[in-house]
Image 1 (spheres, rainbow, N blue to C red):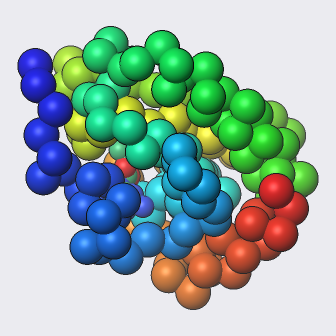
Image 2 (tube, rainbow, N blue to C red):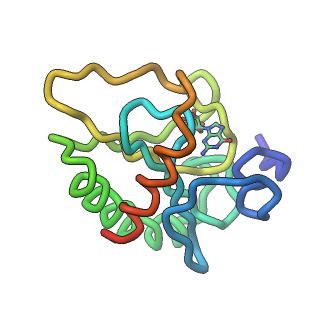
Amino acid sequence: MTYDSSNIFAKILRGELPAHKVYEDDTAIVMLDIFPQSRGHALVIPKAASRNLLDADPAALSAVMPLVQRVAKAVKGVTGADGIRLAQFNEAPAGQTVFHLHFHIIPVYDGVALGAHGGGKADDAELAVLAKDIAAAL
Ligand code: 5GP
């Protein structure tokens, strides 16, 4: 399987589509998922082109993990979540729907079931506030 640069995250990385961006540096962006499984569901997206973990450059993987940790801590602090689930899907049978490598940071709240993967769309105004608060906590 080869990388297709017409995927939605590549378009967001090129600035062709809007996103609730939390953070950006030379190697990655962080944004909120617009179909969140829970309040504060964030995505860490390395800029280097790869479909997923299987074809990623190991150097890009080591570069991004500290950011994944920082975002997990910031999201937990801002949302007051009781735990954080880290998820990452590789190819469609495993649940991948956007074919540019990304890491899901999914807050988990005691006694609250997670929503479906790629379920209902979140409120834009609420995402904008959350994105700002998480950015400030990073
Ligand atoms: P995957 O299934 O590939 O691991 O995850 C793709 C994720 O991207 C899903 O959680 C889905 O809700 C999210 N998503 C799909 N389209 C968009 C979009 O246009 N903007 C944002 N921020 N997230 C998206």
